[in-house]
Length: 309
Length: 324
Ligand SMILES: Nc1nc2c(ncn2[C@@H]2O[C@H](COP(=O)(O)OP(=O)(O)OP(=O)(O)O)[C@@H](O)[C@H]2O)c(=O)[nH]1
Ligand SMILES: Nc1nc2c(ncn2[C@@H]2O[C@H](COP(=O)(O)OP(=O)(O)OP(=O)(O)O)[C@@H](O)[C@H]2O)c(=O)[nH]1
Ligand SMILES: [Mg+2]
Ligand SMILES: [Mg+2]
Image 1: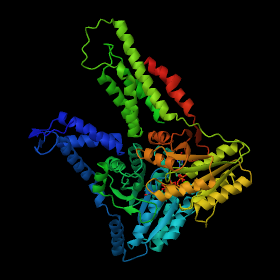
Image 2: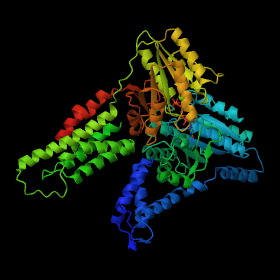
Image 3: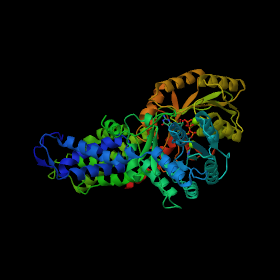
Image 4: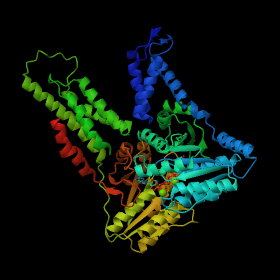
């Protein structure tokens, strides 16, 4: 269709129309949200229009290369985020200031997201990762709502040989988090991992409660946990959670994304693009299974390969 | 859900078919079908399904459509005739679109009906975190309230805290339950639990299983073993409304592995339109029986595809479409 050799031609909007339409369809079929696919195609168009095309290239090839470029730029921050460095640097800073006093506040991480995406499991994986790298995490059981949530976290704590702070069900999760941080400070844990109950992003009372927890405990890092399986709803989810955590304290925001169930989508990896495009929050890790070691850095090349698979 | 918002979008785009000239051209038809396709894809309906739907509609109406370059100004039809023809064509297109959507929602297979005084063994399966355990509690609540002798079996021996989760729900609902903290074999537990409740003359015996996915063959085999051990009267596939393009293939894999007979769509209290989960109906050729709309035991609505379709696209909306 558009595969003709184009010689030393200047690319016009018209030349790009058909290949971009094709690209949009490809992206949506790979589970990139419709709006985001549109914006990505727009960027590709901007980068190509009025460009002189080397006679060896077909328009389609040029479009594909431009798309790879756009994706690389989009995912670049994800490859650079390093949670371990952040935890360690806070610990070192504190210990130099207070000469290893027992009053240094730990690095506080809160995981947030809608129901069932994998917050608690990812929290356990993070704890395993941090422990394996010489940190001393405390788990805080602040999902005080869902049946079995506290026991679920206790099982992980036991398997990982880590301490857990829990106060059962029906308690104010913000207060439980506060007490957990206090205990960690006393016991010398350098990082606290706060589990929270899942909630729909449009559930105002629950989102407000999350804002309260964030404002009252001032976490060093809020991780939005989302599924690689998520469809167009991903845009709304990450936006609304970002809004909720910054509601009472504008310095608080979603600092990173953890994309779970990456092992269940095969080549339909589009959610990675959808999520990062919305908030610019980098993808900290992807979850690739149900075991503790199933946590990986996102591979930009892998994403590109899957899109064109 | 997806179709609820589609009605309006459909009306808007179908309006494009009413042209002054009284002709509907290929370009116009394509543009309308693109609108419909976009609306469906943005609701997460499987792209594959949408393309099929589009081709089917096209095939049905093709012979009524005029070519763009078909320069037939010299034909001597009068205006009234043109008007008539255009409105027939647009009605045909509407009907074709509606029929295709309806067949998406209305599989040939009829929902399972519970039998009084007999054990009805219902096996719940689905992806990780879809909402199986929570839906089981709601489902038990639903039948127990209607006077069925109901019990639950926890055959999820994998997820941390799974048995506690089911146990806490069962205790709150005062529904008997069966499970173990030490037995690691889900097949054995499922079999023992179901046998026990059959002996005790329970009518609705619900079996919870771990989450699984098609990429891990061992997990699908385990599900087949559980199914073989308890010989369920119905297998219910639980699908999450927030999920997108991967669901069709996942649902297909579940359906190929065990005899899925019904679908429940959860998390419709969020903003998601549920088109991915809807695609599961096509993949499994099984009807939706309930919709989940929250985390509480009462947040479960029975779903009847037929009445949903006729309410939405039938009387109300089709008349709307016709008047547009
Ligand atoms: N295949 C796969 N499953 C995962 C992954 N991450 C989590 N899960 C599974 O997803 C299910 C839900 O995980 P949870 O950690 O309980 O999810 P949650 O977000 O804490 O759920 P709520 O607290 O109920 O909102 C469990 O069965 C996990 O084993 C992953 O990366 N891959
Ligand atoms: N808002 C909302 N949450 C739901 C709904 N159905 C289930 N959930 C929540 O989704 C999360 C996961 O539900 P579970 O019942 O644990 O899911 P599951 O399929 O049993 O998970 P695994 O056993 O790990 O595979 C929990 O937080 C539930 O409360 C629903 O209809 N609406
Ligand atoms: Mg949890
Ligand atoms: Mg479960």
